Every structure is written in C-alpha cells, then in structure tokens.
Picture (spheres, rainbow, N blue to C red):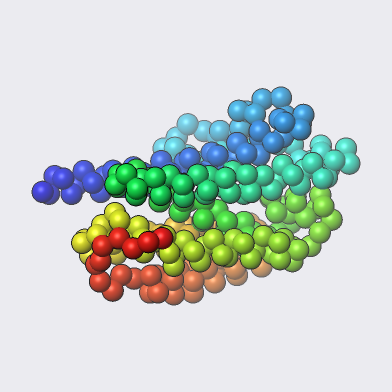
Length: 251
C-alpha cells in the first residue's frame, strides 16, 4: 500500500511538471506559429530555448518565443504585432483549455482517473495563464499585453474589459465546478488527496501564476501579484477546502 501511494504521488508530481511544460510550450508556440503564418518568422519551432540546465528543465524560465516585435512596430505593422502577442493566451492557452476540458469529460465518462488527472492539471495550467496575463501583467510597459495595447492603440482598461470578464468566468467555473468535481472523480473517498488537490490548484493559479508580476513589470503588476498571493490564494483555498469526502458530482 505504501509503495502504491508513493508511486501515485511521484506520478502526480511528474504530471504537474509535464502539464506545466505543455502549457508553457503551447503558449510560446502559439506566438511563433502565428508569426510564421503571417510571414514574420521563418521557422515556427525556433524558440529561444535558453541553457541546458536543471533549473531551466524544471521551470522552462529561459524559454522565449523569439519574435522580433521591434521590427514589426518599426515597419508600421503594429496590428500584426498585437495579433502575435495575444495569440499566446488566446490561441495557445485558450484552445488547450477547451481541449483539456473535453479530455477531462472523456476520461470521466470512461472512468480513467489518471487521464482525468492529466486533463485536470493541464486545465489548471491554462487557467493560471489567464490570470497571469489578465489582469496581473496587463498594466505594464513591455511583454505580451503591452504589445497588444501598443499595436492596437488601446488602453489596459480595454484589455481588462474585453478579456477580464470571460477569464474571470473561466477561473470561477474552474474553482466552483471543476475542482469539486475532480475531487469527487479522482479521490472519491480520500480526504488527504482531496485537500492536496485543493492546495495545489489554489497555489498554482494564485501564488505561482499570480506572482508573475511581482518583479520587473511595474508597480501596478507588483501590487496585483501581492493581492493574488496574499489575499486571493488563502481566500480561494478556504472556500474550496473539502469539508467532507464525497463521490463525484456533476461539473
């Protein structure tokens, strides 16, 4: 029993890393494939992959889309720069959010909990990306949302209005509906795993992704990250804390 439990938690950690890597790479490739489709990148696979070291393998922190936005703006192609910049969160994270939800429903229908856990964690990573970009890194002078605003000559408040509401709905649905359903489906009678899933989900979205604006993105992003980490993370965790173990409910 102990060996089985150890193998499960090792698999859980591996799936956490794998789904984060997939979410990250899909996001970056959405940028590069959009740039390639528009004729502004010759090789859509040519990311800046950074150094081959353990930290980069674990976090992918050095990987970047490697798109020359400066040349696009200099050529008066700001609208294309905006499309490339927003494609990461809309096409990459957005499409894979839908894919992960469909895959989760399939896994639940076929009663395949490991596949369901993979789909749930992949969904979690995409939900985290939504918060990461809107609103955490919307009020900045550089990076994706700043390029969107510059290229379309719009304010950060326009981004908040257009993308903030649907992203908030998705995040709310994840924590109010999908997380309770996943607790019931994946761990129907396990109190500790249900609590671990609640902690991992809340921490990943509001602490890991939510802290993205803590440094290097300006004062507004910094305080939004502080709010996410110090207020939203504990509040959501308390609201989502399993009061009792129960079988699966409908998502």
